[in-house]
Image (tube, rainbow, N blue to C red; front, side, top):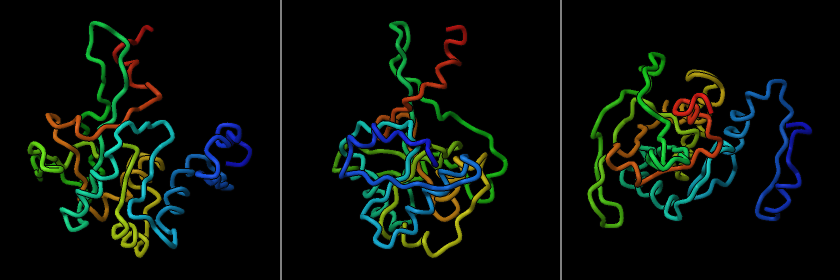
Length: 207
C-alpha cells in the first residue's frame, strides 16, 4: 500500500507475479481490497486463492484437494486448512496447530459448528472426515470458478467477524457456503505453515 511495498523481493517473481497498489486510508482494509479484486476479476481461474502473507504452502496437491471438495459438494462447500507453527524443541511435537476451538457468538447466524459433517476418499485413499469447525478461520480461502462467479453476484461484507482481515478471509466465504476443515484426526490432510510464529509465545512465554 503506497510506498510500503517490497519491490526488491517481488522482482524475483516477475513475470509470474503482478504488483497491484491500493490507496487506502486505513491499512487494515488491505485484505478486503485484495479480496474484492480477486472476486471481481473478469476471468476467474479454475481455482482462486486468497491467503494472508505469512502463510506458506508446502503441499503440491493442495489445489486438487480444494477442487475435489468443491466438486464433491456441487460447489456448496469450501475447504479450509489447519494452520501450524514449527516448534524448535526436542521435548515437544514438531508442530503447534494454532486454530483451536473458539466461541465467537457473532458468527452463529452464518456458521453452525458440526462434527463429522462430511466424509470422503481423496484419490481413493483412506476415508477422511470433515467438520464444520468451531473456529473456521485459516487466513485463507480457495474457491472454484463457479463459487467465485457466485460471490461476484453478491454484496460482500466489510465487517462481521473479528476485524477486517478475518472478515476478508472467513466471513466472505462463510456467509454463502458451508465451511469445512479436516477433523483433528485427519488434520495432516490439509495444512499451511504459519510462518510468523506469533502463537509459540503461549508455549514459551519467557523466551
